[in-house]
Length: 243
Ligand code: NAD
Ligand code: ZN
Image (cartoon, rainbow, N blue to C red):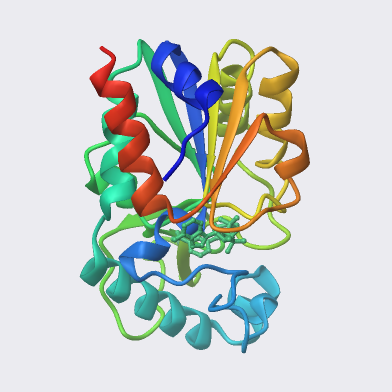
């Protein structure tokens, strides 16, 4: 694999930065992406499965689908790309992983600084009063012990707003990063895909790692086309060999 000189120089010399990750980083773990060829939404209407109106219409269908995803994620575990970005991050003075994924696999690979834009699939909350419930294991949709509302996954659904605290924190990283790695995301979901653009305006070097070009490719400094589980370990090797 040929990695360009300016990518090598930037990955070696950066001291502060962030990665923006999407479903593609978990694809080599066997977790389907949303929009790729084998994406999960292909035969299903996403609005039925991941929206407040879908949950209202058929809470059990949504709950079953999330249970199935939780089971698959538990079986899967992190892949070499998750471990490589952890190693890269640890070698920086400051580094955060800003993820659109809800699968907890960055944390499982040992990354400590992870900002979850869309929540975590293992969290749950009451649909009415918002009470948080962890470790809910139930085949039937459970009810809240405070208000009897239905319990739902604590993730951001279509049509829902991101947490403003998480977003503010993500924004801060675009202000003084040397580098931003955009990894395995189709970059069509806002406001996540705007983060690299902002970071670039503020002087960061933006490199994208994806198996194909995306809508953000024209706006980054370099697009490395290939499998994240091969490219990221190579970038980690380059970085660590220079320290
Ligand atoms: P997406 O499905 O829209 O895009 C996935 C991207 O990854 C594509 O651009 C594809 O080309 C690339 N890709 C797939 N396999 C790859 C590989 N092996 N190597 C390199 N690139 C690869 O995903 P997204 O951009 O994260 O979409 C956003 C939404 O999908 C988010 O809201 C997120 O919450 C949700 N989502 C999360 C998970 C998860 O937690 N693992 C899974 C599916 C979807
Ligand atoms: Zn409640």
